[in-house]
Length: 87
Image (cartoon, rainbow, N blue to C red):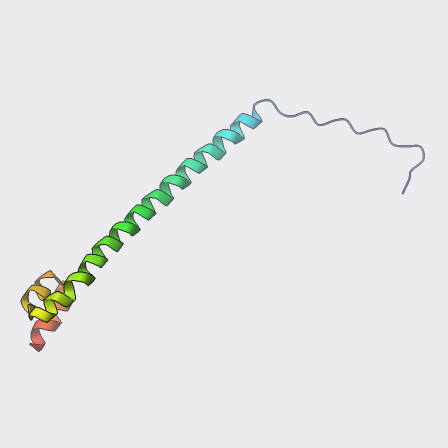
């Protein structure tokens, strides 16, 4: 659609001074915080995996040896209380 008389050209938007650097700093800080969060979560998850893997490897050996007291000593209080009552 055309208008008569033709509209004057729109003036170019002038960028605000210093806005680009502020955005860059904000994005950088968010990136660092996000990276730290991912690292912390990953480190914690990996450590929990190591602990669980060790327990899974040790438990069958203790069961085969009949070392029930040691299993209950290493267990949580709730599991140990329930298990000791059944022996």
